[in-house]
Image 1 (spheres, one colour):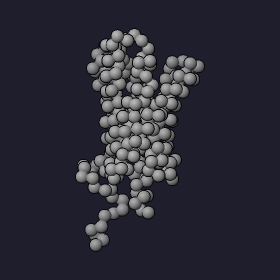
Image 2 (cartoon, one colour; image 1 turned 90 degrees about the vertical axis):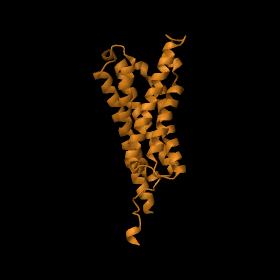
Image 3 (cartoon, helix red, strand yellow; image 1 turned 120 degrees about the vertical axis):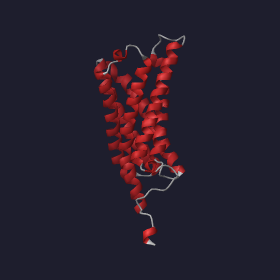
Image 4 (tube, helix red, strand yellow; image 1 turned 30 degrees about the horizontal axis):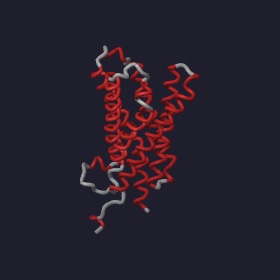
Length: 226
């Protein structure tokens, strides 16, 4: 009967709280949690390095570009898993893999490009320029990989646009935060500093997840209409 039929816009029931079945909400929650995890991993690595016999060596040499990319990929994978929670398991895992690859590779390329061209700029300009490069690369790559694994080619432009928008807002938010609340504010209290940055990462992650969820939900509805 018509009254008993589900609308084509409804998402599959995965026996999970309903808000996770909406890609916008699921993405916001997933990337929020994922980015908090990334922040905590980074803090842990920094603490271990400061206590090790290599303390005083260049942070880049210890906390290598590959390590930064891998920890970022972990956060992306968590976000992607929740972003695609309304989909069957295989497609959900594909979404997680796509976001992990996009963020991980984007971070790696950002570090490479920043090192290559960063010497030509002042420190402040270099940081802002690095954030711009990171936003464009990571946002575009995440959108590209999602379209690649999910065969959502006609939404490529939307995924790239919303991905770049989300990561730009996130990175500018973190940049603004570091300017308005300098590290000296915490008086050397690493615990409070870590807590503040974790909360900031979580908020930024929610923005990213919600932005990517917009084209994601559009692509799902479009597939269900076919």
